Length: 499
Image 1 (cartoon, rainbow, N blue to C red):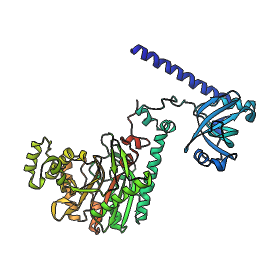
Image 2 (cartoon, rainbow, N blue to C red):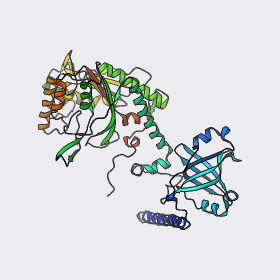
Image 3 (cartoon, rainbow, N blue to C red):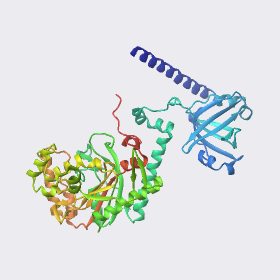
Image 4 (cartoon, rainbow, N blue to C red):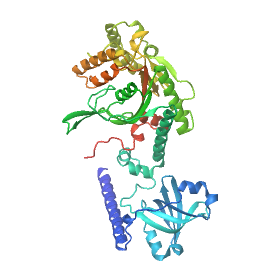
């Protein structure tokens, strides 16, 4: 069996080598004839494939100029049919020896699948009814030296698709549509916040202090300053500096970097939007978040019903709201309102096989119960409220329950999509929480925040009551497009080098 497989692979490699040589020989012949395709610098187009297909009645018998990649060829002797592909789709072209002349037609027949050409001709419909372009003249704009994947099987190997996304985009139209939707989603997000009077800002990617989230950073080195720096894990602390400075509504769409594992919902670099608004709170952030998601779904998909795997996510109804303790009681049968202290929490964890570490406090254990028993049950959109102070170093305390914060996380289909809170604006309380984070770092927790003295200084000038929220754009796009892996919505996901 192995011998047959090895022999087949050897034959495939030999065939590929022959194809590569043939294509290079064609390029050499073109250059020898003064037709070097890589010398062409411009081709003026008048139309694209979709415009022609959608407006045939107006364009029939009219001259057009389009350009694209050859995706199929059919030689009929003195005439040939091809399909060429541009960003909008594919259209058939028809070339005849009578129109191009013997020499021109001979060069046309030597075109390979993957070559990029410019075509001028008139629009017509073939006897079989297919809208096409009758070629009057053409020009080879780029020679494809590597063959595209086999026509009927295409590019299916997942690893190769991610590594060679450029080929994936050429041969898989549904992949192109995913990234068109992603672009539309980002445009809609900007539109939503711009219409509400938010200001889009840019904040540093290189930070001297690790903060704004609980995550392990990437560390780099600035040679001129001889200083280690972090790639940002969040935009939060700089955006809140903007609020302190007087900008009352700000947002940033940008890349974050977290030195963590990779799975279907995590990539080391990813895109978020964080937005902050003065004089509002966690309830205002819930309104903004729900409004944003419904607005974007309508703009991108034209519907508030989002099919995702075996379920349909319903955005047409108000999002559910429940506290973390309510959900743990509902799904785990443990009432943390009746668990007064750390020792009782540890006993409950032991009874339910929840692993507790030395660094964990009462709030950490509540969160562990939620992760174990609740997250995967939250299919329809659910705002999970009242997170413990122990796991929320930047959120304002709930005055009714000082051990809890005014915070929510939005869960959909068992995954977190947004994290928001009434921002902590008490600099004394903030310093104490940073100090607690530093104690965790001393215990070996490399995800804990560092002391950010400049941010504390900014807070001491006075920060208005503020609501803030962060949303993972990649996961949101996964939901909008029905993709189950974050790599399917990242043009170039992080991959381990083949060597």
